[in-house]
Amino acid sequence: MKASWLVLTFYRVRLQTWIRVMSSLEYRHSSAVGDPKEELAIRFVNTAAWRLRSPREERLPDAQAFLHWLTANLAGSEQQLAPINVRWRAHQHDGAKTYEAAIALREAIYELLVARIADVAPPIAVLEHFNAHLVRPADGIRLWARASELAWDLREASDRDLFKPITTSAASLMTGPKAHRIRQCQDDRGCGCLFIDESRAMNRRWCSMGDCGNRAKALRHYRRSRGRIDSSSS
Image (cartoon, rainbow, N blue to C red; front, side, top):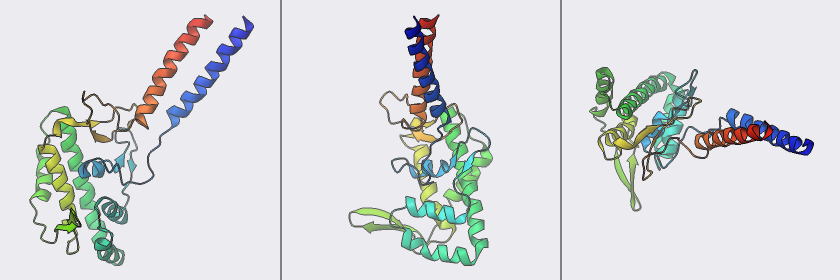
């Protein structure tokens, strides 16, 4: 009887330690780049992490971070964006103004996508804000061929032209065949990341099985195990 009690106590301690580790694990990739498999607009929106709790985590804290994000997400853009990087460092007001507009655009896209998830009409002001970016001419940006692939050519882009790949991605996503598959992570810590549910059953609940999904499974396993141990010891 004593041996049985010691075994049960051992496993209870192990499970409690495990769940404390899993519950406190708030792993996110240190980069703001995002999952390359996701749509560009989704990656952009997710640069604000832990949206459903306060305070949330801002992964684009300044203009340089926004430019770095563009470089990482638009193939072949590093050299093309170098002159803008130099200019923004010399004239910080230009970068700050573009950054402020980029964050406002990001939040508008987020509100539009969340409204789509909830199957409700988006706020008119938000839609108008997004449309103002969508219809704005971007004469300094076009496509170019990189071997057999096409990519954005930003060599002559103005500061506001930099938004065009993002608005194009967002408009295509919201009006295309994947619109009904947009989801928001259901992690109970307030993750709030958006993703496209590509599962056949369309029942994906978490942004990543390696992070939020793994933690949720660990919680369920712990609670079931604790229930069995408590039943055995009673």
